[in-house]
Every structure is written in C-alpha cells, then in structure tokens.
Image (cartoon, rainbow, N blue to C red; front, side, top):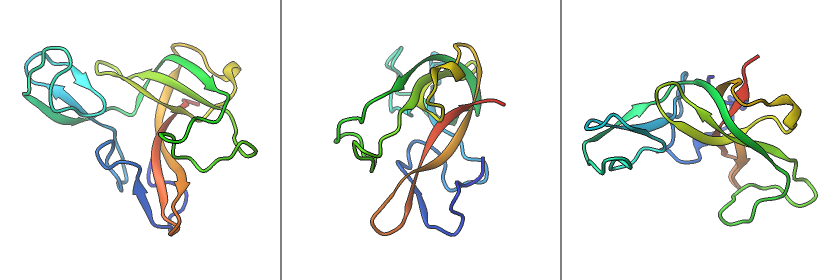
Length: 149
C-alpha cells in the first residue's frame, strides 16, 4: 500500500483531509468521539450520534468486510464527479460500503466491475490509486477497495 503507480510523477491527494498522503503506509482519516466512542468517516468536528464536539482524528484500519455494493454502470454527472472519462471511454466500476472492524462503514470505489467477483461479507483491503491526472501532469490519488486475494 505504498504510493501509487507513478513513482516519478508528482502526486497529491484528492482531498488531504481524507487520508494520509504521501505515506509508505497511507490510512484513511476518521474521527472518534471521546464521549460515546462513535467513529466517523470522513473526520467530523462533532459526533453524529451524541453531538459532542469532543472528537479527535484517528487513522482507520486497512481491511474490512464488504457490507453492500453495486456496479456503477453509467458515467456519473459532472459536477460533482471529477473524472476524465467520456461516454466513449467510461468503464463500469464497483461502489460499496466496507465495514471496518469495530469502527465504521466506509463508502468507496471498488476496483472490480463484475458483480460475480463480489459477495457480501467478503474480505476487502484498502488501496490508493490514481483517479485522474491534472493538466500539469500531477496524479490525483484517491482511495478504493479491492477483494483480498
């Protein structure tokens, strides 16, 4: 789970508040409530369960279980989607919730596009990969999940 493919290409996170990047061991950044123990992703300034503002940023795990999924079979609307695909180049992709043990369910892209390769409850691992390349050649890195081999 080190930096994504283009080692000599400049890279930046799609959003520096979502995960640690660059990093040899990147992790998603959530928040944990010191009042009730609820973990949230992405990190929040207050707890969605008890409304306490006594929360702290925490790193989430790197493995979880697939809780639910679908296959995105059409080009998402832009904005808010910021990919570079066109109707001609778009390829379906998985989207799902991954339940991180004892923490939180995280929604994210899944690097599998065939529903036959996915099953509720299967082990998933966090990955970081290029989402798009900016006009200046900088790779924009995002997180995703893939089935554990």
